[in-house]
Image (cartoon, rainbow, N blue to C red; front, side, top):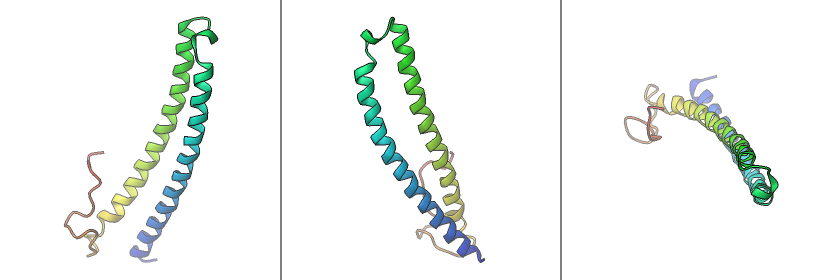
Length: 111
């Protein structure tokens, strides 16, 4: 398999992964709305013996959400690295991705 075909296959795979991530995020948005409604009805002062218990429950819910976002961020950073490798290598092969000498810019490259 040529390098160009391998790169195209990587880009196609990345597009499929991004579509699946979009579907996951759509489902998570629906789930988040349900959690929000449940939280508004159940996480209030009358449902707990102390303010400390209420705070602990709120923090545990928040930690789950943060873990999910961190996982998706790691996945996206991996995809970014793959895209950077594919698009950055176009110069070496004589390809012209974007017309400038540095390829596409994804913002801060220090990540």
